[in-house]
Image (cartoon, rainbow, N blue to C red; front, side, top):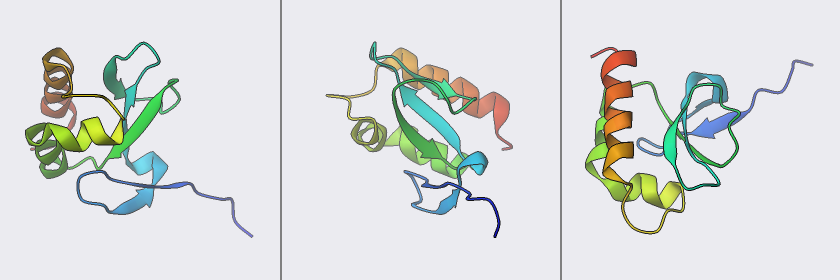
Length: 93
């Protein structure tokens, strides 16, 4: 019997994939929102496919990410800019 592979769901397209194929966004206990490349940071996490369309959907409709991370109100603008910068540098256009 093979090793258990954790499965997570992309918050944008609702596709289920192995956890290692997705990118984790985390809300830290201090309330900061940022990309968690290790997948091990403390806090509430949400997962996104490494697809530009998923990232654009989430950044366009801020409520998707704020709901998934259980943030009251919209995600702060500086956090959104950090996510846009990550998308521009790490994802194939």
